Amino acid sequence: MPAVGERIKKRRNELGWTQDVLAKKAGVSKGFLSDLENGKRNVGADTLHDIARALTLSLDYLMAGEKGETGPPSEVQIPASLADFAARAGISFRQALMLLEMQNQIVAHRSSTKKENLDKVDWQKFYEAVKDFLQ
Image: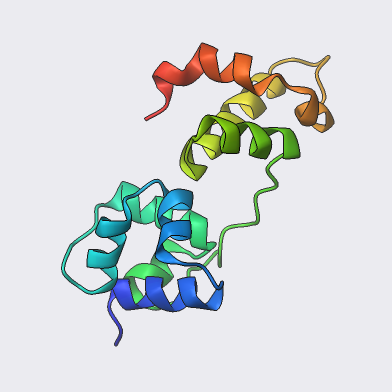
């Protein structure tokens, strides 16, 4: 049965991504990812979750090679304005997802703000307000 690193590499190759691309999307270093794919390192649950999310795979699949009960995570639609901001600011995929999640939580508590308006969010201003909470 293939190891975690082999499953990560297989999915990365299926997506046509380099190690650099996956490392940036998952918020890890290329060296760490290379060692992981080659079975030279172990990975913690938080980091494995970040990699699974970037690859749109379940943790069950990465850890045991079995499809999880819920299947792969649903696709996350990142607003174009957030994607543009993330690229300019050099923030990781994980941090962009956290920003989106924070914004969605705020929107859920405000009846006057609609989710469809996420492309109108000033992501720079929002990031500055919450960056201390991002890991």
